[in-house]
Length: 262
View 1: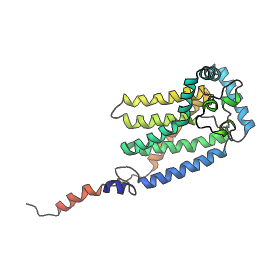
View 2 (view 1 turned 45 degrees about the horizontal axis):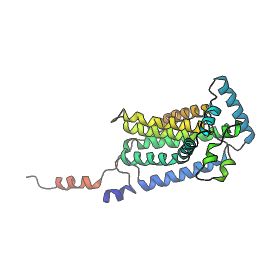
View 3 (view 1 turned 180 degrees about the vertical axis):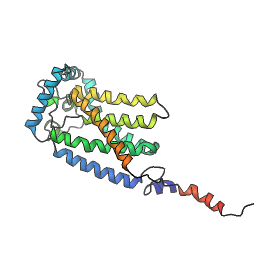
View 4 (view 1 turned 90 degrees about the horizontal axis):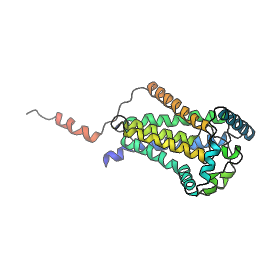
């Protein structure tokens, strides 16, 4: 119990202090939410960018958004499942972050830095390239989430900002896969490959629900790669840390060393 209590305010075993970490992450997420809500306000530019993206996809023969959306819209059971995945993926992100913090302290700081880097790098893109999602920009696209939304969010059909590029649903699922892969690749290399199925599933989800384009997904992959590189550079520039030791394990040898030799 003493070790757990001390971990709340001290860095132990390579992990940051719990209270400090929670406070910083909460403040950062609130700041990111405010900044995210402030970008992508230019509706005209968002539609123009969406049309340009559609033209590029058509030229590359990868404009599959309407076809997969029509297929999903015709399957009510799969549509409802897709909406649950779309809405509840944050639970997976939070669970992965907690799991890495508790069970894999050696990689926690790296994956946390990658998460922060993703949020820092995506905001300028949202500001510079607002993008309307297919459900608004492509005629005939069914808004699957609005149709089956179990949360009944009224503002869903009246968005206040347009930030389809890149897809952060795919971006966060890629981060989850990267975090689990980083934690398991040394001890369970085959098992470490399984989490990469999650972003594949999410990519299919955002395409079929009419929320993102194929190139949005490519943008998410690029974002993760850039964030991993930025986090690695960030880590190399930091001074070496001294890991805090568990005092309950070091006190006894120290006391015994002061005793009289037999």
